[in-house]
Image (cartoon, rainbow, N blue to C red; front, side, top):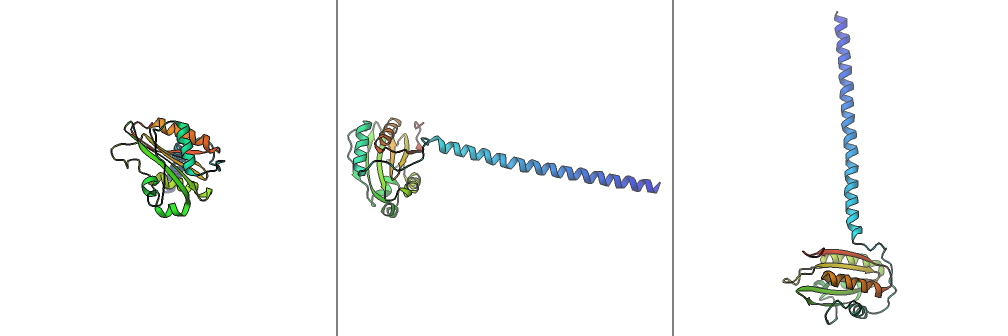
Length: 208
């Protein structure tokens, strides 16, 4: 009788050990399986947001050769989206206000830049063309502009949208109404000749 009790006790211990072992493995597999799936989903959503504002082409060097003032003048005339404006040169001193770039960054990486700004139908607009010293620096400068440019700098009037268009070594920054930004973007792409990458980094209440 005593021997039977010992055998039964051992069997119970073995069964409990096996059961606990199986429960532990099942929980582990569930956790391992869930983690990558969640990360993949987040990564896919992030990638979709980035691609959404891209025109589908890699930014390559443009075929345009000329000053930023000439290019901006051509873009404005071609788009017919802006009222008569005065084009001015961007300097290290006004680069922080005009582009959101530090003066040191402007001196180090920008060959020259021009801008036109004003107000149309109670919407602030600005168009600027930047020529980088090195085409390889264009993506970096584009990122700095997107982080530093303040669409609310006019205080009482706001643009519907602000975006950049990169066609190395040129970058165009545009803020204004949807009509203005779309028209100027198309004119820039036509004038520049090469492929381009478009990034919308600000949307106002009616900016879509």
